[in-house]
Amino acid sequence: MDARIQVVYGNQNWNTTYRGVSPEYLSIRRWSVVEGGIFSEEEVDASANVCVLGQTVAGYLFGDEDPLGKTIRVRDLPFKVIGTLQPKGYSATGSDQDDFILIPHTTAQHKVKGIDWLDDIMCSAISQDAVRPTQNQITLLLRERHHILPGQQDDFNIRSPEDALKVQEDASRTFTLMLASIASVSLLVGGIGIMNIMLVSVTERTREIGVRMAVGATERDVQMQFLTEATVLSMLGGALGVPAGIFTSQALSKIFIWPMTISIEAIVTAVMFSVATGIFFGYYPARRAASLDPIEALRYE
Image (cartoon, rainbow, N blue to C red; front, side, top):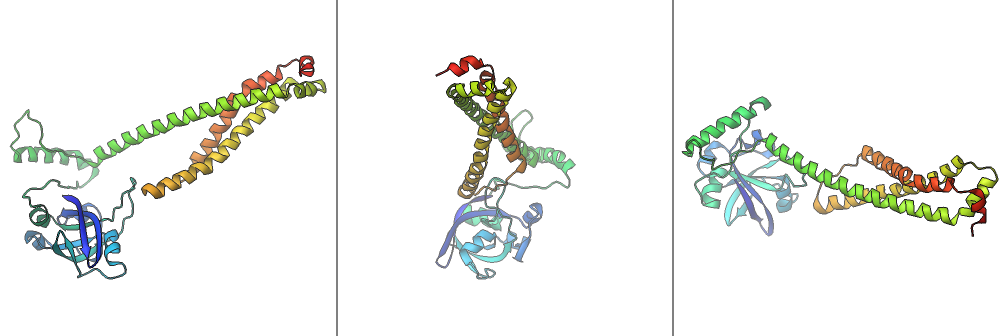
């Protein structure tokens, strides 16, 4: 069980999350203690006022001071600090994994929340293959304990890492499709803009095209010239877009505290798409320039 709460030490206070757990919590989460230790089963049975601090909480409340043995206050209740956890940093979703305190679940039930039941239980299977069988056994056990008859719906929810991963993958897939749609529209608009600019350029340079053809330039030469210009124009847009995208990503990462990684493959793909856009939308203006009649082009005013 967990909830947001304010913790106080001296004149320092910090809004964090407390988690009511058993001593097995650290082994299930594969976490370790840097200083001190986790509370014992005897302290859990006695609903002792002891706590273990995450590194973020310890840093804000104590700074460089050693927190072990000190007393903090949680909802006006004194809690003795008996340990600090190994730092984990930020998760993939940008949440601070070190911003919480651990207290015995019995203390959380009886002294902090004032309830006699658990709202959350975390279990660990012995292997990945045992996750589903373990989940089914827990379901049967809880249905029996809750006196749920056959055919009735469960009054509890069980979520495995596989379920959480599937939800995350679905959300990531939806987000990727949304970004791809936005990128496609942006490429379309940019490509149409390049095509219009090149068509205007062909019109304004009609006499130049006629002169080039008159002195020996072939249709292929003219077409390659304008196709190259369109490609260079789109590449310049891509070259400006890459640093702009990196800067925007870094800014959002700092604002929302999201981890950010720069993918070279994504940058190369973006540049290749910009080149392809220039070639695709530059073909029609280039073909139009190459198909001009030299005599008519020289007469153009």
